[in-house]
Image (cartoon, rainbow, N blue to C red; front, side):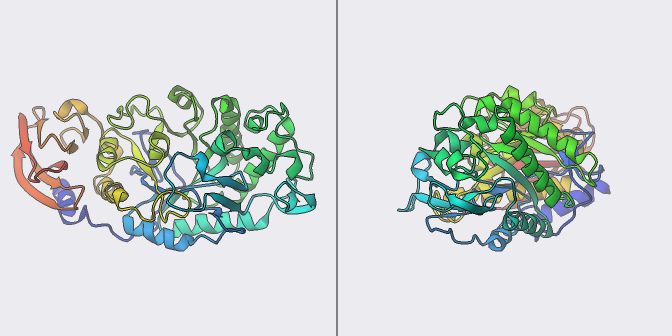
Length: 466
């Protein structure tokens, strides 16, 4: 009866995006039985998936000061999509020109302002943008108030938040970007000089090269932790797309967070994401991080490698395409034991087109995948490519199977030979949300199952009926 109940729920509602409700049972930790996933109570796996974008923490647009972002509308939009995860972005530069980004910009205005920052602009004296200089020995209460409120609001909607602590892409690739950084000596009153080699980039700030700056960064990290430690829906990410020479600094910060939180009321997962440009996925796997986001090496775009549980992997289109991906990528990732997340242009204020329809299949599929993951519980499931001819199979053999059939493969040969029992069959159309119940099949043999959908990909779910 256990499996019959599960499949009934599946057939009835898997592609219906339900309203989310908070169901946290403590902070996430790596699931001991299946370390491809997190768990919050030790009894179920927590599958993470969702849209994120650049200005969901700091405001960012062509106005000065930038208009306030409607975070509540964004959360409601995520709930409608049935997403449960976001990266909560920071942005170290106080302004930047999107022409340095290769992503298509639909806006006429390419120069953008960013606010608030973690440190107050108190002066005395003017920074390079003719505004008061920063005092990096103090904290901006508005920044941390906003951080706490947004983490809390996301939690009330059942959404996990990875708090991004640093941002490394901007100082590398924005022309004259370091002129817009608080650690530029001309922008702060503390005589902090983040460009000691004088090359104009200031990459040393993310390299443990300047102990004074590392101390300022550690105080900032402690302030972030003190602000949100009591929430269950928190994860941390050290830095977005920092340069490869940042490895020792990132490892240091991961260990620093683990050490600082160990005596706190709660401990949260810490992530390390791909180092652009020229980084290696091996650096991520070798790190002390609890979760990672790799680049495309190894096939993470089109034929993702199966996760072996060495790390919880949040495969992120941001590090695979920038803005990109497709519906198939979501389901391939699910079947290979990965947690797919999408870099979403959302309302197109900075980059991309507003609510671009071409990304709807990804958004919908992430929501459908989350529904399926919740109903089947992935805690006992692992990638078993050998059990299905398509090569995309997540299974608890003999109990439940999720099999993806790509567009050019409308049937699957499934190896059920080791289990002489009946299996209920359900088919999902991940593009349109259609679902169909198939005829039961008898195990104890290999079976060939034909998709009922024409000219589309499909997801096959098999569940033991007794």
